[in-house]
Length: 202
Image (cartoon, rainbow, N blue to C red; front, side, top):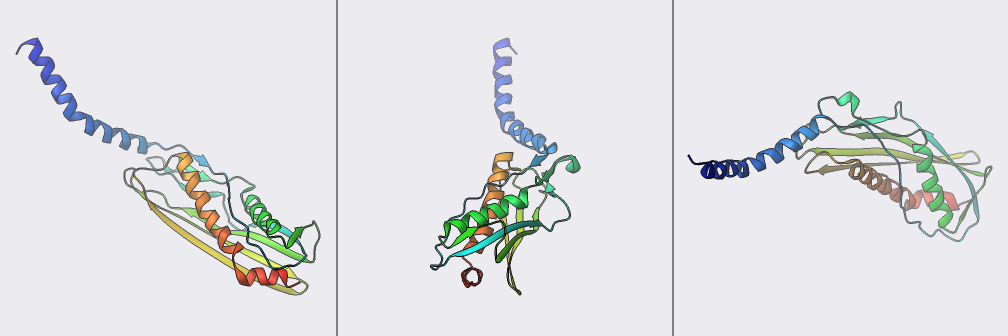
């Protein structure tokens, strides 16, 4: 075979192998995933409440036993953990407090007749079983506890969102999916008529 024909044969086989090389690259990428610490960037629209002048204090509480919410998978799952920072529950409470203030009926003080606690009960991200076309579930539960005088009300909200993705999500994609999850949880709390009626009842 002449040198020219050898070059043609080489490039022909190289083109045939390119799709396989692309798949192998994706697979190798999934073999070793980096750990990730999540943030929380909520964006929840407030709901106008009935004309009232309610003074409230908003607290946060983290009921989880660990700050680890899952793993990004790969060969070394224990070295690719997904965690939350120490102030994750506080950021959640701050977002709800902001929505209350924007409702036009609630002002916040350090000491107030109405005590509201935003608790993070559960938060988990399923570990992908494969790197290509994984199915990942994001689930969380929060509760809002409202206390006025001797009366206490507790409202719970749970959301699970499952996504089929082309590959294990990047840091930014993972963060965006987490923000979507908690935006939905906070939205449910903000529009809850039972909770809102108790808040403005005082």
